[in-house]
Length: 229
Image (cartoon, rainbow, N blue to C red; front, side, top):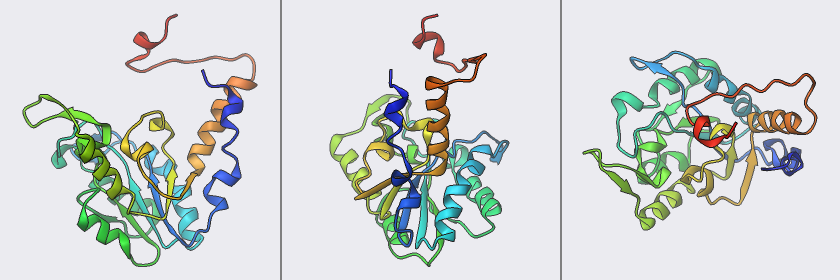
């Protein structure tokens, strides 16, 4: 179990506020939002990422490139069911500016689009989990379990690493996963976003000095198997 003091390294000097903001910021966000018939039914996770994005844009960022997963396509492209394109539309509404949606998250065309965008551009990449190299395992088109080849994982991560100057993690809910977008982006500058700081502060407070009486509500599918009560 991590102690709360282990989270205190995430001070302001590890946040986007401490960086040269005229760079291209490459965000890992959590846009895994519920949808029905390709319509977003709850946009809270998108709204939660807006303050960090707006801060960079308002401070003169060259561009903001966003990557996320959506659902569990298991490494198989399923744009009809798991595309992030509806998220781009919603994000445009929340930001009040255009959002360029790219139909992939890696490769020469994506690298070219992110290399020299117009000043102040916002770019959203397609679902990371359309590539088995994101999670390292998945299923093939027939539903058989597969593992990603190490060389292809390296190539996937290398392509992601070409899409920005600064890596910003603002996806607390998936930060515990050793996925390529979490641990494989090799950029010289890395920082946390405002949402990450907020979540870590809440977590540290709950562990170190919770207000009493203290009530913990546990939920989710896996708790039964992971926590012995």
